[in-house]
Image (cartoon, rainbow, N blue to C red; front, side, top):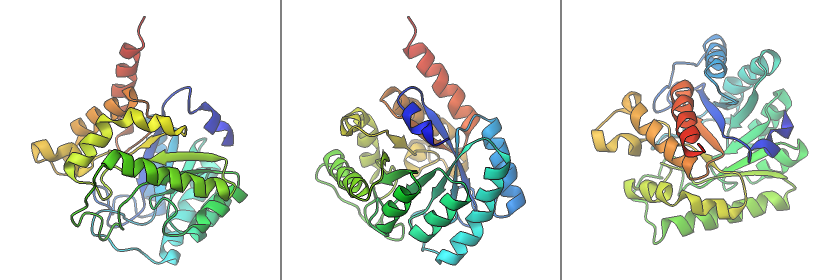
Length: 272
């Protein structure tokens, strides 16, 4: 499955979110056992997910980091079970190299680092050793502090510059399959998210596949005062826009609804 990277330019890949945590912002506690997590992985694949993104640490605004052993205990059994039973790509959502190493050994194909190599730079070397793909994301600060009055002079330029630096670190460590993510909702004001999505096409200039994660984020429901479990319309709208503007991977909770909506929008866009 490691050849998936060469296919990213040919079609959109759908990344289903599987949080095996007690406290994630929209689905915490729903899949915090091996049985429930695996059942959700089966559902995500059936709904059209190409990738299952397994995360063992909540990164919602204001959250604290968990000990590496806790993250390992939560994620590795799930990855092993998915790897042994489902024909699907697996991503590990972590910013710890020890977790990344164990996940790749257990069958993961992608490391999804929300810190863009700022928390644990060794993630790049670990990814390179396994010839895996590495997604580097922009975040201002840490999940604990990122929404405490973030400021930008030029949000698009600053995020792009950060991603270039992160990708260069990855290249220097030997990573050959790099994916970049602007980090919607991670240290961004409401208007910053809007601007990043409006100007998303400019990120294609960086030359790396583009991962977008807007699913159930606060900015998708702000106009309506919608809580996390009532942001499907905003999630669909932002993912359609992202797809039309060149996103290669869409990271979502509601795979079936988003995939159907985006596939229809792209079919209409490409009609002759």
